[in-house]
Image: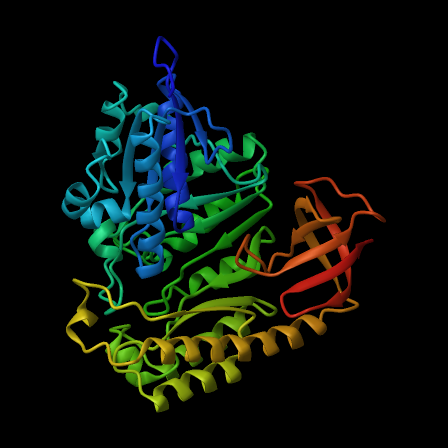
Length: 436
């Protein structure tokens, strides 16, 4: 049992879910530290007496992980190992009333927009002068930058608007200020994220303004890579492709979740597009930015997906040959539009279809990687692990994409530096190379 005495509080923030949640945790930590509160992120040490769990509520697996984590710390509180337990984030926003009944050991639950209320539990104030400043929890040389919050899209399967609200863009000046602060602290790569990055600016500038934002961020001294995530295909602002082609520090990389390759399913999913329109857009993107790496995500087993729909998705993947691809089994989420449909694809079939798409993509990835052998790429070194320096090309985002492995017994690289690497070997999802 910990003795309370006069020992100063120490807070440990535990983050679950996506990179957008990670940014929220970093903002929270910045505010806490700005109020002279000792705070760490996912500390291995058992020296924090207050835990804040930042939850995910997106799909079943993520919700279960969040609940399991809350219960683990609730038990720790009951055993006297910690004094206070607070829960915030998407799960808390979506199921606050249920959670308060089911897990009453938690001292307080907060929604996604309730950081000022959480701070009050620490007798702390939200400091507006800290906007644009952020403690980063990633490696020092890259950082996620959330350019907008919420989403206005009506996708059938998605509960994000229930948890994050309507789309709200952050002003360009605020984002440039943040980028300058990050660059001053050694960040070389910005990963731009939002629920829907291509909607950026419509609310505050009355036009899609992502191209202007990219130009302004590209001008920030010290930022050598800018990477764009979560571009919605409907209403895609093609002027961003011109900026990508003209600016050396904007990566030839686009993360564009397409969700399906069947027009019938895209209609059911309320995506506002067709397979033909998606294919035409991809063709234009590849024409305007030669060598661009395209990442997408797909959903297998959505309510109403027939075997024919699934085969069309397989054909779409085979024909398009995405550089990077993730696929998820459909999760039937309450209060979404699709929840009114019958969840008619059995769980084992969802998993079989998910596995089939990944098997196809694995073969495509192997072929694309083997074609890189003998070529040279600029690589950002992220870490050293298992006898290798591990980095990424401009075509790869951290944690989700391919990596480049350099034999640390033969060559030296400094973490956070760019090096030129010749590719000597390839597997399905990794490249091996030597520094030139």
